[in-house]
Amino acid sequence: MVARRALSASNFNHFRKGRAMRMLSLSTLLVSCGLAVGSAAEFEPPVRLQADGLPIRVESPGYAAPCWADVDGDGKKDLLVGQFSGGKIRVYKNLGDGKLAGGNWLKAEGTVAEVPGVW
Ligand SMILES: [Ca+2]
Image (cartoon, rainbow, N blue to C red):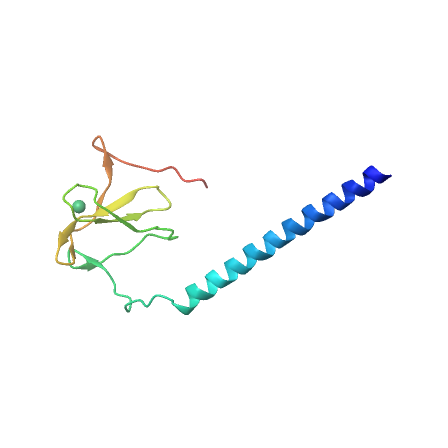
């Protein structure tokens, strides 16, 4: 009975320490989020990107996950736009001065690359 009581007290102290740590973690998270909201970044108004003089469009149903990466190694990040239904990726070469060339499918060893979908 004594051992059980001692074990219970130990568990209670462990519980209290764990609870205190959770409260500290939650408080830290809330303060961090508050600081993040309080110093929210400001963005420029959206612009429609064009490539070769035409607006860049994505195919239905969307999920294009656009991103920037220097695909050709010229030091300028090119725009990559995914195609959900076929798993292809269109690359718009960065020409500099805010201009993009018309898009071409990303190729691997001369063949259009595809990333298989999960659906
Ligand atoms: Ca590039």
